[in-house]
Amino acid sequence: MITEGRRGRRLTATVTNLEVARQKAYLISVDFDGAGIGDVDRSLEELVLLTDTAGSTPVATVPVRRRSPHAATLIGPGQAADLARDAQDLDVDVVVFDNDLAPGQQRNLQQLFECDVVDRVAVILDIFAQHATSREGMLQVESALLRYHLPRLRGKGTELSRLGGGIGTRGPGETKLETDRRRIMQRISHVDKRLKELQKVREAQSKTRSGSAIPSVSLVGYTNAGKSTLLNALTGAGVLARDRLFSTLDSTTRRLELSNGRQLLLSDTVGFVRRLPHQLVEAFRSTLQETVRADLLLHVVDASEPDAPDQVSAVREVLDSIGAGHIPELLVLNKADSADRASISSFELLYPDAVLVSATEGAGLDELLDRIAGVLARGFLEIDLVIPYTEGSVLGELRREAEVLTEDHRAEGTLVSVRLPPDRAGRYRRFAAVG
Image (tube, rainbow, N blue to C red):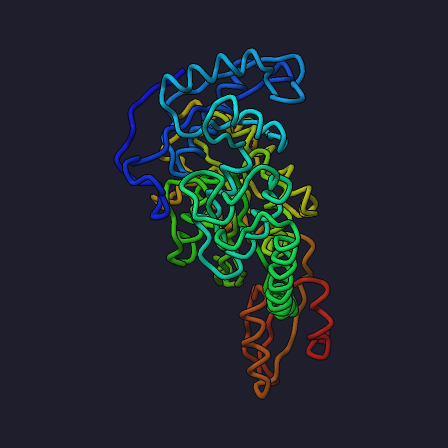
């Protein structure tokens, strides 16, 4: 169990009680699967980070083991009463369960603890609500929040109609949340309609990009693995990169030139986490389509994180769930500057094809670019073309969209040897060199 005092920073401007600097949170993780102590401890450590990112101060962490969940209170009324007394002695403001809570369990526990009780899903939704900045991102978060709150309307009274002051009560459009189910359903319908309109725009942009021979590479990884930092290091994108969970929610795409002169589109999107709420996966599905359409996934891993193998598995589970599990993957072991040599050696044995980099220091980036070029070149055709001097625009297109291996200026035009995808070769058939 850990304990610490309150910090000075306020949760948000919507805090109702201005005398409370930050909510004090009491964290509980219940194990029904007989997982090892290390697994429970790692899960609680991540919940501590999530809770802190959401704006509350964890003052205690409690692992609980049970054979099976209690239908009414998850942990049983006796144990709930004991933990409630402990939480009251610590004067906590919110109790956070690492497990999903059914609406009835949440209400019963709130009565026992005599304070707000939320689950892991609510914490993650709250973080997303605070970090969403684009119109699409805010609508996606609102959609997830509405669907999460809908089955929890019973017994809420007017709580959802006013500005909240803590985890689970915040989010874009929260003042419009009403206890009346019909009005919330109408709001969900409206939000979904707006998202479909934005999705059409995104699909049109994606079709335009896919119509060219420029390959698409998507950065994926566990939250805080350093995807945005790597995007900035490779492209100078200047996107927000902070040592915080879910600091980036909106997709960002930048053009990148490889060492062989070939160009690609590199995209960064929301990071993943264990047990990513299905409401968010569904709400962000259109944004995640950038990943599904990619020619290559750069799976960024925090090499300084002892739990990295489990995080790799969690990311791959999400990729499978959105239909991106079949896309070629290149593992990138990031934060080499922070990882010890023993950890790096262990990961290199576990992932022999991975590339070791430090996005903050720029180490290993040249090798990464070479590896990307090599993976993208697999299955490509090498053909010789003669481009007449009157077709200069075609030569410029090849330089942008294919890998030009050699150029030789002759009387009839420029003889070029290029490497390009098979589905693009037909476009240049009329320029094929003879003999």
